[in-house]
Amino acid sequence: MEEKVSFEKYISNKNLPRFADKTLELIQKQELQGGHGVDIFATGHYAVRKVNNLSLWENEEWVKDVFGKLKDFDGKENK
Image 1 (cartoon, rainbow, N blue to C red):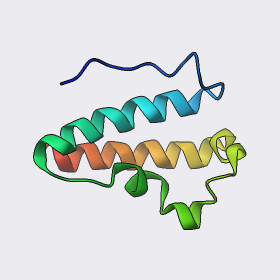
Image 2 (image 1 turned 180 degrees about the vertical axis):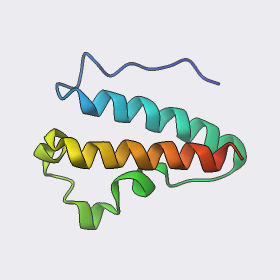
Image 3 (image 1 turned 30 degrees about the vertical axis):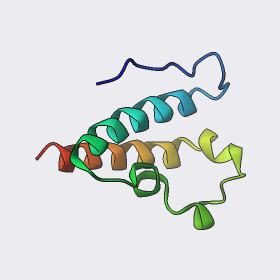
Image 4 (image 1 turned 90 degrees about the vertical axis):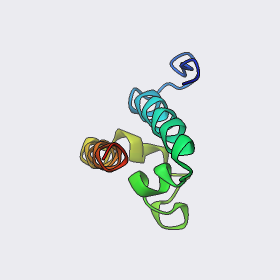
């Protein structure tokens, strides 16, 4: 696996670095297995989720749901 990249100095919202770190971890795992689509699985398709709505990452319920989906995704990949 590649060296972990930190986004903490570049992203002010506390939820975004956690998401970026977890997404990169899962993408690296997925690429080793030949798959794609972690971010869309977790956050929904970009055309639907209103990508430009940065306040979405302040919505703790939505963020909790995203991380729950990442956890589910990770569990499916490890089977």
